[in-house]
Image (cartoon, rainbow, N blue to C red):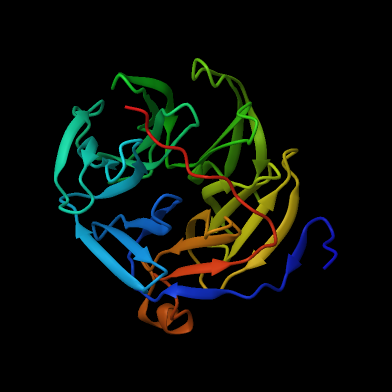
Length: 300
């Protein structure tokens, strides 16, 4: 099918896990196990879906969880919680704290997080009490040192890297902008911050993202009922309409990394709104005709 730039595409949307997540987030496809992981931030819980048998495993966590990441050690993960960044045993839920950069800010919590391809974990914080710019973006290195990268953040999201590792993406959702940095993979340094896309006038706000093998950024537009694909130049290339108002994040998965999985949310929806979007809180899937890249893992 020929697609014009910016065209809204009629795309089949599948339901892979029918659920009622308050705030589904951080979908991650494990290429080693061929399973999908994600969190319900407000559950709070870590979830694992095996497409081979359809089984969903739920691991309860002790506080709000913003994101998780794989470790190079198979079977182990990182978790960014309200209480800081931890090593996580995904089977038992056992946690071991490794970084608490905002222990002095009890109203803050970690939100979106992801690993770069050198094995560093990046995650941002936000106030869980009010929408004020008290959050920050941090970089956790393999030696477990945690560095402040950027402050003055309201709601951090959209962490992703271009396939050539030269561009890093980041959004402050409540400011309605996706930003880009020049990125140095060897050092982890960022520079030349700029606006990648200003979403003023869009139906929703920029939430979680992932990058496909062609270098385009896929963004879940919270409140917008849609996924948006941006070219590396920041132009809208494609829009996929969804049956839910609040998609939260997306990732590529499946044996060929050609399925785009989408987490969604029910938080703050009225009973009337939920009746009109019964798939809210579920994990959805679309096949957009492009492939993604394997998920990076924490090197520490």
